Length: 330
Length: 110
Image (cartoon, rainbow over all chains, first blue to last red; front, side, top):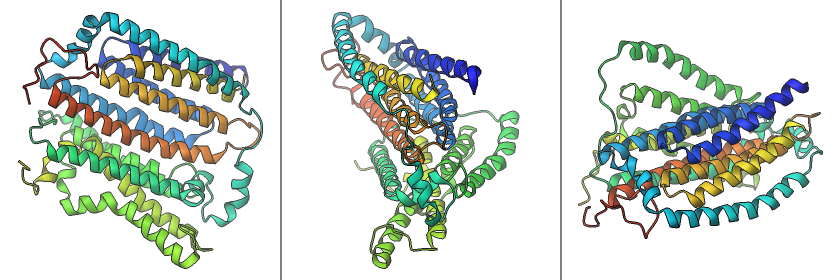
């Protein structure tokens, strides 16, 4: 890459650090969230610089887009619930707790400086050469049923990780739904919008494009960067974008279909794993020749579940239609 | 300095900056932002380590772990933000200082 690449990396590193410090200390929370979204986009660039295009795809959709929507949605709820008192309360906390805040800041700084030295030493001493696990993965690629190494790791060598990750996602959705069902005094979060011809035209153009991109990413996964995660995330982002333009999305699904989509990825993993346990003697151990098909099946269902779960986490909680079967617990 | 070495140090600094924010900021939303900074630092360290050998392709195992980690991290963020909303709704507070009462705080409110 030469000197240009070096200068670019140096600037990127500098901007990352400046952004991260700014987002902690800038006085407005809204500015902090916007800086965080910018940081997410630059992280995507950093992953590309570090030869990790798969991670870049996931980060661009999640770190920059979905996380930003989550934070901005919460900020909107907080500031509009109590007539902006919440938005000023951070400043009030700052002003009224000065002595203790200084103490907290000094103690925190001490802890961080004490931790910084050993962590920098670890970074300095960590290996800078060596091939890591690349040769081991390359040697076993022939039996995995796919030709892309990251997909092979995600759904073959370490498929147990993916199973547990779907479990984490499922537990988070369950916890979120529990919070929402208990809560009967929620404000509607959807902002009523007047019909907007520009917005209508835009989503009509974008929707088919984004659906195609999502399907294409899923199909790409078996031989190059892409796969179930990126595809599910792009699909989730599409549905969230559609809801933000005021269209009905999750409300159109019958509750049963929605619940089935939420669990199908996880259930499929468990069923396939258990079947392999009986046939092959080990959990999620694919038989010779079947690996490619099984991975594709797992990928399709995992992608559906990731998309549904992320949409539910980001905006499903403001969709009352899903809960109309549950009576008020009180 | 090759990019992997440079970004390893950046990762450590991001982690420590996030930790400082987590410990020192009173507002819960900012604590969650700081927690996200810490996880970004950890991810960056793993990916930088994976890219250490420029002559062969980067190690795919940390890449797969980080992709899994990104999805777990947004689940945690979403749940944490929902809990913040509940805390704010039931106690009218947006900070975790038990000894500090906002001039307008009232405990009798639902």
